[in-house]
Image 1 (cartoon, rainbow, N blue to C red):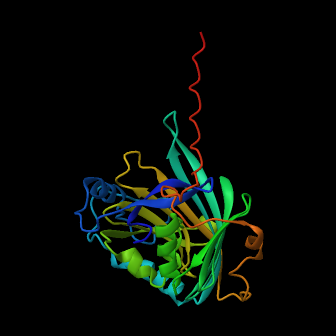
Image 2: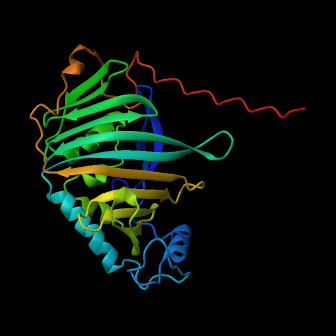
Image 3: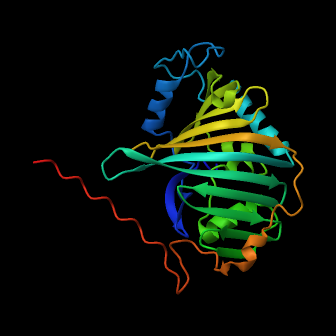
Length: 306
């Protein structure tokens, strides 16, 4: 699982925060006590038709750790995504980060995504920090920072999947919605899957009826909201089990269009022509002469009144 097999961290890329995987989970580990406890606490015993307005839960574990209904919903979503030759959607990510005072702060990114299989991708991202743009036209990958007027370009592999791996390896660029645009979403999602169960339906997310499914591997416990009719993902919330603070990561997806007409020049940008050229590089492996942005200094602790 590209999203669920990794824990999240923040790195600085040209001064902006990007969500990237900090480590790959060992998919061969046994179910952790935390995961088992979460499954026991959340497993519903009410009929599947019960709605989210009045959830019925029990401390008993589900009859099977991988419920067929839950797997069928996940598979239907993945099949719908894999069948699309082109798509556009918007992804908003909210992720928690510890503050100096204890309670978590929330940071966010918004990505407008345009994808055309097998070899074209555009991501225009705004964030709590400088904006970034990424273009892949089947031959070249381009990362552009408009505010700083910096651009990195390089040769790219022949597929979206391989390019996503390369741009992470070369520059620590990662998008949490990767699982929905790869060639085989179900393979990525189901690798190492240990728990999957159906929760019920919601009529809240994106003003549509969604099926709610919880699923987990040895590293993360997640809940996903999937359109009951169109089978498209609307929201995913993940908690990483090796995180002692159990910080939450929310991925919201909306504005879905499958098989849209996409202009031929959508996957390149003329704006980068006059930008200062830099090399693709991970923030922890900057080339000579380049310095990563300075980390912000923590705020001073308020003094107690006398």
